[in-house]
Image (tube, rainbow, N blue to C red; front, side, top):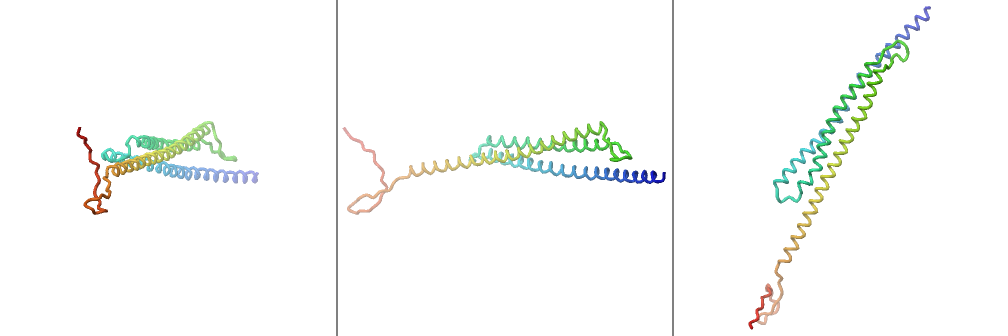
Amino acid sequence: MECDNDLEGLNRQHALRAHQVHYSYLDKGNEAAISSGQAAVKNLFLMHGGALIAMLTFTSGILTNNASTVRADSLVDPMMRFAFGLALAAAASAGTYLTNYCYLAGAHNQTLVWNHPYLEKGRASKVWEGFGVALHVATVSLAFASLILFVCGFLGVKEALVAAYDAAQIEDTSGASTESAERPVSVPVVAGGDVGTEASAIAPSITEEP
């Protein structure tokens, strides 16, 4: 009888330890998940927000400078990608909160028992955990989509700048060719018996009188 009581007391101690470990895991896991999720979403916000502000400033400078070879309409698509990436980052921020809420709701609905494994998952707990897994996958997908849009926007800006540089090179080349074609040619002429005297040779127009 005493042996049974000792086993029951030992079992109760193990149960209490398991419950304490469970609650400690919930607290630390919740803090880690929230901090890491906030840091990731914050980085996405900074990336897209900074790029969007820089693009707006650059486009404003192009519109006020008529001599610029960069076309403002070529920067519209990259700006839209940065804007959509910013919206996806906001959605990922909301998804981070909802994911943590579902996981905690699932843990809260677990039943604490005195027998091993000392925790039982009921129907409500499984439903909340299922929602948490689905939202977790959706949130990670939104974050990756936001990152992909940032890369695509950066590549779009690169293409616009390369096209503007090529257009400027072509314009400079054509301008130099036109200038060299209009420049008069200096040739040597013989005048008054002195050979080697150079003068600007301009072809006169010859008019024949009838």
